Length: 269
Image (tube, rainbow, N blue to C red; front, side, top):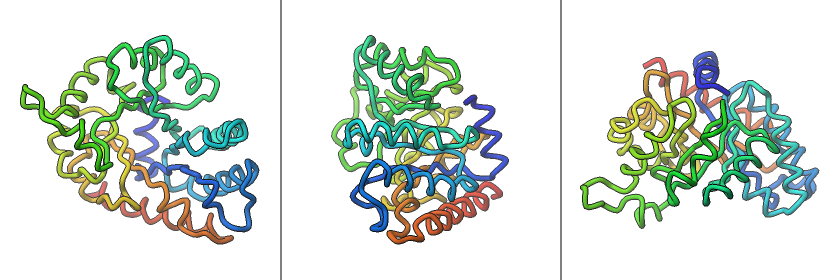
């Protein structure tokens, strides 16, 4: 999906919601079997219920890979069910030496035709270049994450006076364009969005941490929005596990619609 198409969808829906399909098989509603078929049925119902309110879906591959072959089959079926109007993200956090990254890129851009994949930048440019070689595909690089461990490395000060994550944002942005690169910035770090926007004003940000992790959507929007909106705000558990009963899809739709309504209001300010 191109940047123009993504921006068009955001403006059309007045929503920049990304629904995270972090489908923990142990948390499926009791009436669904804890099997591949149960995961697929759950995901399809969630997608059908929330599609009017979001512009993107993010599949956290760990929840599928942990189930072996059947998990991969569930992931493939889930991806196939997502409407072509919606931006799809493989939250796989890959990144390795060049020839290995090329295989990861092939996996998630060709075999499983996602629009985007999350990658870790620690191994540098040659580990990211294979992902950037694809047209109309996106590489989403970890920047400033929402977990407490981000202080161990990301928030360490360099001799230059920059934080490590600031150096990562600055360097990686020079390796590609705003039509193929995004960055992960956690919603719990909302106070840093203004300074981040000074480094990467034109790039999209994938923002986890709203909802169950307590990030503020209004703060993220206030400090993170750019002229193209430039945000995909992800909500996972708060949407897909809004209910553990037979009404799980209906409750997911309500949760997603509430996020979308708040986003519409924030965009009009």
